[in-house]
Amino acid sequence: MPRVLAILAALSLPYAAHAQVRTAYLSWDEGARATTEALVVIRDIEGAHILTLRNDVEEGAQSLTLEMPPLPRAANSIQAGLIDEGRVVRQSLLIPVSDRAANGPELQLRASLALGFHDIWHCDDGLTYELTEANGTLHLQHPAGEWLLRPDDAEQELFRSEDGTSLRFAGNDADLTKAGGEETPCQPGLFRPLLPLESLGRDQSWRIMIGAQEALIDLPGLEAEAIRESGLTAAAWRDGQITIRGGDLRFTLTSQRCSLDARGVIYPFSASMVHGELSVSSEGCGGSPLRLIDGASWYVDSIFGIPLATDKAEKPPMTLQIAEAQISGRGTCNRYVGSAQVEMGQLTFTDLGTTRLACPIHRQNLELRFLDALEVTTGFDLTADGRLILLAGNIPVLTAFRGQEGRM
Image (tube, rainbow, N blue to C red):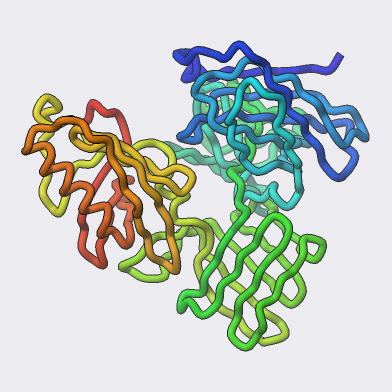
């Protein structure tokens, strides 16, 4: 019988599960190898894993029907992929979980979507690690630590660092042993989809949109050009760089953050573009800036340069959260929702609407100032310690942090 492994994160336990069982349909374009497994991930609205499924795939298969267990109430999206020898070789886009009682969804797995700068490993110590490979050496890191691992002369699938930390691979799994610690099992994770991806030249003279099935190129001296998926090739060796080619275009991304304008926004990737026919070479920025600030809620601690009181009885914390081109959260009395978008290097929050609860006048005035700050925002910055600064031009209008609500 096929092996099915389900991992339910502890964070999902407080949520009640739906009684219905969903069926997921996975398909891909090339027969699976004997070492291939399917990986399905359910995420919450903040992007955190709450349920992970692994299923054996028959050799030569190009599809899989998977019966899903009851989904936690927190389930927001589903994504699937194929892993082979510990690497993601195909994956799907993120699909919203909209109707838990219905069958579906249909998840098409593509090699062009399995693009990442690093391999991702989730380990039983509760941490997520990024693994980069260069010249046979592995760079393993997470926010609180990093290691340089070299091949062990005595064992092919074993890598060690100078402090004794080791990583041992076994098929689609790995075991991490930190210096002086116990062995910790690890499993590969799917990438947050890179495509569709928009990139702009630093002078905003060119624009390239790369989707799952075609690339659109807008360059001076060239009529708008579309390259279909069959004409696109992508290489992601998990060495911190991704290269996409199509026609006369050679497009490279690195995981370094990038800015077009000091008063604008931060892009998650740096880009370089070479077009052979035009003999054009140019640097730019790529990816959605919202990718850097979406997910978990931000807690506001200053507005227009004025620090906010930390007494929650006096002022409940105001929040903002970015998800799927939408901003939402709470003010001092009301909840609000609106649109979030970045266009040509500028961030805007529009169509802001709130509930209409009764509110003491001092809290109401503060809430209006908060909404004013959102409406005048044109860009953002992130400090070294992870603090968010919303900007109007080059003027800070709001600061916020992530973390426990109790910090307020």
